[in-house]
Image: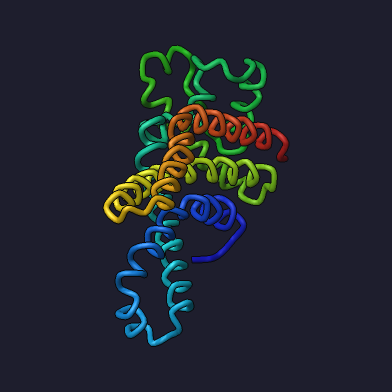
Length: 231
């Protein structure tokens, strides 16, 4: 997998922020209980073994967090791509954009791709078709703007918060496990840390709908604003 700026900021950074409970759980319980076996398997210094496994955990969490954020939260709030803000904003029934701006976008879509979006009447009688057509158009617009730095920045911001929310879901679950284990081992320090982490990772989940909608709309508006600037 290529390490590009999007991967670094939108996938790796939120994973690092939400991997704290997993790393603590590994180092506090797994590494302590199975230290000798792990050392024999890797035939390395204990500290180096822990670093390698901790890095592997972070890499694994990058994949898991992305899956959770897209398949659970994004799909839950937007249902499917045809319900994303980039689709909604071009519907005739949507008032996010001023009418004249929307007309300019439609004219540019016609000029650039040779595609006519449905009229208000056609849309009201078959909204699903209108959404599918807009989804196709949005895909082509993204392709045209793939090198646009401003759009990339907003895409990174949306991806960061979406993946942070997905990571917080898993981090919250692991924090709860860590808290339960701390009661079993009578570890007061880990118990207090567990409570703190539960609160920290519950907050993004509490505001997940607001965050995803807000940054999704920001990205959609920038997408079409930048589309109007190209020749």
